[in-house]
Picture 1 (cartoon, rainbow, N blue to C red):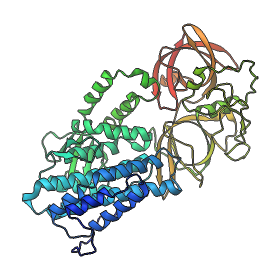
Picture 2 (picture 1 turned 60 degrees about the horizontal axis):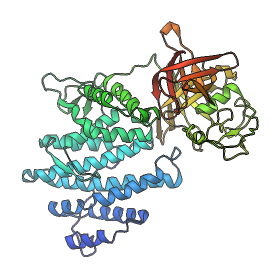
Picture 3 (picture 1 turned 180 degrees about the vertical axis):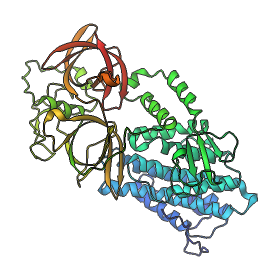
Picture 4 (picture 1 turned 60 degrees about the vertical axis):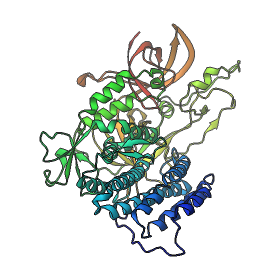
Length: 554
């Protein structure tokens, strides 16, 4: 990201007309229904305006006309490239790049305005607006980078930190301004936006799903003010995190900072007060049904409390590896890996029950196929489609399409793996997805390890990178029958039983689809050895792809 502001020249007769009447006519003619054309016109106009030498009043009035159409166009662009397979390629990558460029062009305009106003003490209200708007649009670049799991532009943090430092220098970080960049304008401050950006980066966004990243960003509009920013020479400073206002780096743990931690350009971020605010939100949450369905926010907030309040430590130093590994993605595919193909008996009754369509949160079509992930075959296995296309989206005794991908181990520890995607194809990996790892030098299917994807990130240098947290070893596939009012529903679903480890007091747990199970349910676990009835006692996690429960004998 270019830190240098463009050189400005005096407008001439061929320059973009920034007069009020001309601007009104130009915006009235903007074809917002045509997203591509509008993006092109807005980008070109902002680029030209940023090269003109304009009076601050004129520049501010001109730039303040752009937020609404820019947000309208970027929202439309995001709908086309968000929630798409990663890493982004082709048109999707082009659309993401256009979104970044539009945000950056508008942020650059307000940075120019701030640069023109920084020596004029009489124009502090305009300087507040200029710095606030610039930081808001730079935050959108950061947010969108996180949501598509790519590395944010180099220089982005240096610009954000420098803008806050300028506001702090003029003592205007807490001066209120109306934020018109949101769908519903609200009162805001430069410090609030800056803390929102800092806390978002500390939430480990590459370990969250796309909708979770957006939830955190929006939630921080209200929660950011619960944190505190201190100068290093303030009395009774406390806080786990610090920020170097002269660096091109996000905040990090205070104890891990190199250099002079007492320098005047250092700031301390204290998040201790946020814990009570988040506990209050958890205690008052009444949306239990949505949480069970995987759409609630309880699990996210619990993870945020850890991210903002606890320094994670690895179990031991990681050792770089260079071995291939096969990744089996999804509960259905993992269950098939352990149990092998199952032949379906033709049903005499072809009546369709509505509940069939509600039982598969992944909406995968029912299929039957044969696969051997250790025979050196491609990850794309031949799949035979079910002859009856009208049957429910999830029927557990039929198998879902195989999801077996070849990855490369970049790093490994007792707690998990760092994997690199060594392919030009698109991966089906998602944050929160259940996976099984099979190292090629261990072809025995009993040696697979179960984990969950906690982090995704794409960079040009390394490609797509996954952070996989290992779960309990020795996982076992089971069939699960759900009971309702003491009577089996007759539906058989796939589950993974994670045995307990007595030495470290790790209790056994059960991995199930997110629907229709909930805490308090009675279920029957069945495998080739035995059948037992259990009661689900506590939900440990719900990633949206699977749910994990503790259980007791019923």
